[in-house]
Length: 381
Image 1: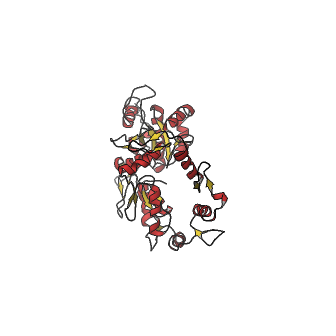
Image 2: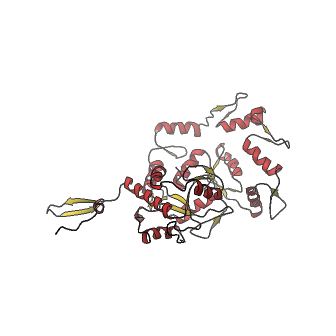
Image 3: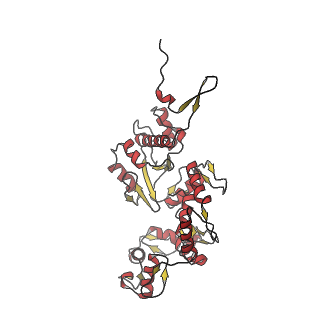
């Protein structure tokens, strides 16, 4: 009688070794990066196949369709667009192209979640995973870790799916999720920062603690040429954009354009409001001015007589009444109610225009400091 047959896959992650006595030992092997990515892709495909969920992307200030990367500002339109345009995709083939990293979980809208196959209502993303494994007996790999983050997208406010906290913007909710509800298993032994995955911790270690350190600001660089360029631009106060009408020089093209409009009244950089004497230096500034001053006021402050045609202007205005100061200078810890006030304040430290992190609202002197902060704290590549 023949011996029992086993699927070959059972031995696919094991290695046979022989001792001096000739005894065969089977040693467990951890999955490679390629194998782990394949398992994560399959998990995501299963979630989208069984779950009545909407995958999406978030890029700083706007939503993006997970499938076609179209910019969509409204969450209702995002859900409608996804259901109408991308309901018949071959998931496994598409996800091979879309999911390129095992370190970045996808984002899912899980409101009114249910199983699309058997129509059973489900209370959470974890409940969907259990349902896939127990009811449909499908091969969801729980060993690879977090593959998706659950969110509930609504217009007025964003509620955390893990606790009772609520936020008026999605960036704050994402920051809250990373800080409070994501388990960071790997800790840098030098600075104490923690990370969700070992790969990210190693990348932080190489970027922050290995290389060439600036003797002035202690920032790390991978090469000597990069460090030399940093010292020239950041500490030598080199201004590379010259005004053709005077001797002034500026750090970037935007500052130069504003200067040309304000100081020299160059027509190209002076945008006049057609309804009042207001002059703006950018089209975006003019648009906000027109909407706030010359459009029909549809929103009112419930604490005073202030009116505006833009809802977020009311929220911004109410900060004055409530004394909210959520924008903090990362150098002197002074706090401000508006990001623009914080950016202006940052000039007192180095003379440069400041930058503000959209996730935690801290201020930084220049864009390089902000990008370094985003990579290490918020895992933004």
